[in-house]
Image 1: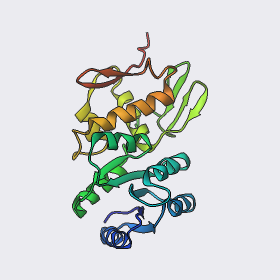
Image 2: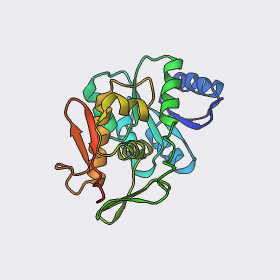
Image 3: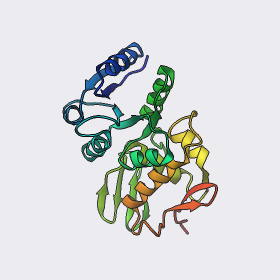
Length: 232
C-alpha cells in the first residue's frame, strides 16, 4: 500500500468526494479544501506530502493558490486543469507546480502521477561531505542544503533532485528524456517544458548571473550539463 497525506483542493463537492475515495482506497490519507484560502490554512497546519490543486476555482484562483503555497511550503503540487496548451503548463510550473494533469483523467493515471511526485532520489551515499563547486556555491547532499553567494537557498524537492542528478553526472551532457524519467519517473520523457522551467528556477537560485549560467549549461537539442571544475 501507499502512504502519504494528500490535500484535494476543488470547489466541486462531487469531485472532492470521488478523489478522496480513490486516494483512501489506494492507501493515502486524504484532506479536502473548497477554496484556495482553506488550502493555505491546511498547508500551514498539517504535515502534507502533496496537493492536488484545481485551477478553475472562484475567489482565490488555482494559480494564485499555487504561488502562495510555494511561498510557505515545499509540498509537492500537482495542478489539475482542462487546459492542455504548453503555455498553460509552463505558467503553472513557473508558479511552483511540480506536475500538470489535463482533465479528464483516469484514476490509474492520477495514482501514477502521485507516486511519481512523491518519489525522491536517494541521497548520494558517497557525498557525505558538502561539495564546494566554487567560492560562491556549496551543495550538501546529506542535508539537502545549498548555499549560493553566501546565502542559504531554498529548493523544492524536485529542484534538489534535478540538481543532485546533474551534479552526480557532472561535466557530461544528460539527455532530456533521461532527466525526466529519473526525476519524475518512467512514464515521463516528452515533457521537455518541465525541464526548461525547473532549470530556469535553479539558475535563478544558484547562478551569479542566471542569464549567463556558469554551472547549468544547455546542450542544444540534447539536454543539460552541470559544470564542475576538475581538481588538479
